[in-house]
Image 1 (spheres, one colour):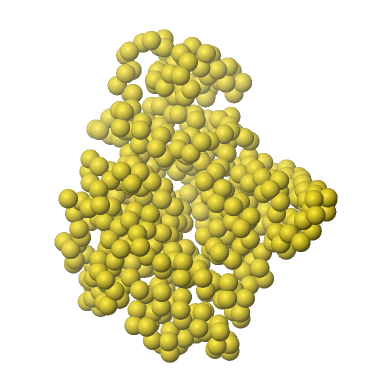
Image 2: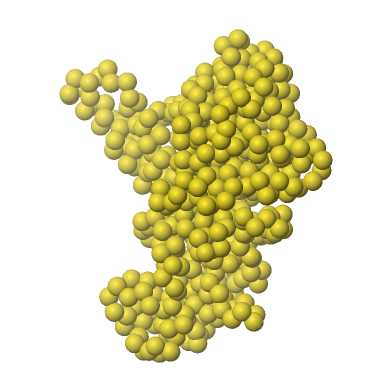
Length: 524
């Protein structure tokens, strides 16, 4: 059952214990299973506030984006988090010893699976990462995207699960964050506020609410509330996790784990600053304001701080529902998100680097793609983008010599690598260029693409033989590109990729944007 707190009762002026008693009483009054919004000043069957009831389409689109959630308090102190990590280490140690005894007793001493990654330990890892949230959960998600196919299958299983899972903090803990961010009267600043979030991730959770919007009256809003202690615990969390990974020897040395953790630490610090996210959301909205294919939610500055971000609620449907849609619509969406990805690289030099499906919503009424969550936005220098494009062009042209030269210029290679390593680098870059090649069949059928598999097939060799970690900028950029390829694959899109890149390159050379928007396919 979901209860939405509404004015005019000023719960924030009361002692917090009394406010919770009143909220509990309201829950008792509501009929089982009820989702109706009602005012604290009216009886549950009062129809006077029925206008605040979300329409059925809004409900279904919101619920469509919800994964099964469970409430658990976020360990917010350093000592509390250390206690959990210590418990995890002890649990893994016990599980490893138990697994060794089990294999000895059953005659499976030659089992190649690492002892530390028994089924019981996999469950321990998933459970602890989802409870800890913050850097713990983010590291799992980070590694899941960065270096798939080089990790032990059991670790991949853990990472896949944590990508789809996160607990949410109970409302008393969320309320404390809201009070600190927006003041004791924070509740009075909303017309309604749903105390149960509809989404939760590594550093925060999102609540549905209604806010005043001038002459428009009240509109639906999404309120992102950061988990307490996440920012303060980033460095200590990553240190604990690094030690845990090293002592269990579950990750290959070629991962350059210390470099990955350094990059992740900075990304997490950036994402914990919701004022930064708001700034980039506004900037992306400005860039796309004349592009009818996309919409970016407005930010309500007076309801946003470093730990709380309130934006216009986007009512579109998750792209996970794409299997129900026509081929023409799936082609259009795939085309538009892929074109946007390269426009971000070539023109904006500003990219939202999180490829999560949930960041792209399709609004059937407006025929627009709704873009949400700009916490992972990154900027790139013109020098880096030019070097990256040189490498991509070498892959498209299929020139091994140009590919090696561009890889050295970009920092992927030192020039002292063995031929096996150089071949692996060339094959992966050449595969990446395939969809954009004029000689490839266009429109390119992403449902049949093998690019990501071919690139991943080279990763174990690259990880084993590379002499230097990848350039810092490529962690986020490659994550987004890989995610977009997989998104188009899941959509089953057929896209003229050669024309997309060719048009954008021409625009870049001419110093103009948006000249070829009319070339975008329609959903019909």
